Amino acid sequence: MESTKNFLAFDLGAESGRAIVGRLGDGRLTLDVLHRFPNIPVRVASGLHWDVLRLFQEMKDGLRLACRDGVKLASAGLDTWGVDFALLDSTGALLANPHHYRDTRTEGAMDEVFAIVPRDEVFRRTGIQFMPLNTLYQLFVLNRDNPALLDAAEKIILIPDLFNYWFTGEAVCEFTEATTSQCFDPRQGEWAAGMLEKLGLPASKLGRIVQPGSRLGSLAKHVCEDCDAPSVPVIAPACHDTGSAVAAVPAGTGPFAYISSGTWSLVGVEVDEPVINDRSLKYNFTNEGGVAGTYRLLKNVMGLWIVQECRRQWEREGVAYDYAKLTAMASVAAPFRSLIDPDGEDFFAPGDMPARIRESCRRTGQPVPESPGEVVRTALDSLALKYRWVVERLEELIGRAIPVVHIVGGGTQNTLLSQLTADTCAREVICGPVEATAIGNVLMQAMGLGEIGTVREAREIVRNSFELARFVPSADSGGAAADAYSRFLDVLRESHSIL
Image (cartoon, rainbow, N blue to C red; front, side, top):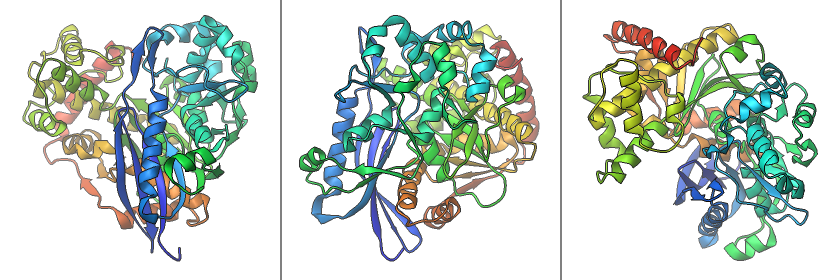
């Protein structure tokens, strides 16, 4: 790298989005957050939808801010959540508002799919964790309930691909995002056409797959005019946000697990080939695409969504807490008093989360948490214990020990959860960077332009550029954590999360 280059990253999560300029030079990276905006779904008669037009306008506002004062951008790229999709007609127009993955229309759809294509066959073909929100079940329900709409579609692309299409005019599907759909065959490296045809789904309408780091084109003329921006290249980083976050894990050469911590917690390892066997099926793990030819063997854990929903419920009741206050109250609550399965069905949909936590504890014969601090402590203790369960299963699946866990993303700001993870997992935990997704997005753009050669080099830049925090198991945590884990396994059995 001869001089500093500026890269614009759009990072859209389930709660909010950001436009961030990454400045890369002399082996170091700095970030400048230019624009933050909420990501608020909209419920109408047809269900829960993403407000994609507003989100695109927010990104255009971020582009306008990035190009002011004559700042020269090397490229732009974006990442979002997974699984949700858009339908384009023959003119390229959006046919319907994309649904939100928490919409309830897919309830029961998995069993309908398995009546046509058995569950184990779906896993052998795709290697993806079974969740009703997956694209496969969303498409199945669409074809069941509104086949005319699917028939009218010329092309099916996922959410980041929709935004890339609006920026460039190129309608393709980026690899890491495509693999989240449960419609992709990782062994064949293409859409699982045979399985989709059995389900009556048109594999031919799914977009052409491109690899992370691919140049999609340049900003379209109308975008440049609206944003007073030059026609800079648009690079597909890892367009799935976890794919970008994992690219920025500041690991060295030894084995490690990662937790991309935010609304969801994605707990996994990097592997060279997908792990698709009876044990990964039994444990309901997933094989999502990574960067530079890797796969992300991981499990989706509910994450801080539960705490976020608790906070929203208390706000609805007229009491506003920030996350720092909730964590402080949880830190003085009794540890491991009550436990839940974070991935239980009760905790998936929006609603009165504190009431659901209390009801779960009441049903399983545990002390019922009453205060906000006790409720949040129950959620955080349970989340850390679920991390331990997943890390132990990962060790079993890959056949080697995992001595260290890296936590990246917004969840690293919750130091109580980080320490609980070290205590429950009995491993060193390295936290940071907070903005891992945006960092991975920027670094993959740089790789796409040839400014960086390898992921190993990119991770070295992360270590040189951002402060990391280390947590080790507390001296007195062993016995309490072991007892709590034993009780937690009983909770998982009660919720049928493990057999």
